Length: 240
Image (tube, rainbow, N blue to C red; front, top):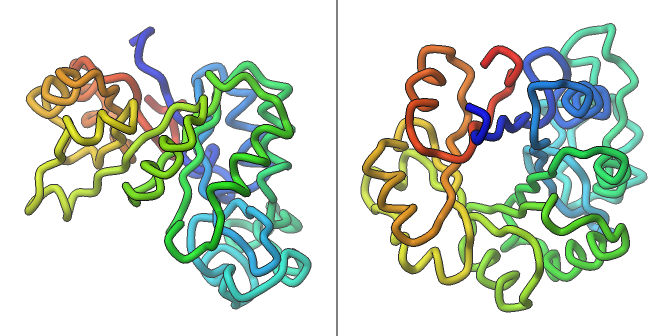
């Protein structure tokens, strides 16, 4: 267990509103958490905002698409009230807000870039932002379902750990080509349902670390923790 990292998915998102400051601060203060996981999209004015969905509809009191609005427009809404009234007045964060927290913490950061194909120049904006903060590159991981995006980062020889996300649906009809992935990434983060000893051993054959998401069930966690994987992503890592 000591070698397996516990990753807080969108912060401590079972208890707190996901991808908010209160969820992130709780995760970074937890003795159980090793890495904070976040999602980013890009606004129309090239700001990297921390949110999972391409719109704010599910996690705010507003309705808007990220790509069609400015940061100022999106920050007029409340991003905590939907969870519970006591969490009202959480604002939409930008990546800088999270990097400031990570700079003061010993914990790592795993950034999922959502739908990068629709955001012009997002890789350079992200790299420049990370370089501005001068955080130890060993603390930073970048992942995406979009392999072309991860390849583009690898081609720029960035110092950060790069990973490919593998979902359950795609895995059913197309097995991961670990050898190819290993040419530009150092880890895979796969849906828990496809992670098996065989899956892990095959990935390890090509020096790929393996993470499993999103594990919120203690029975499933206990099973996975018997495997030689490198980390579990959970909404409630303290439960595990």
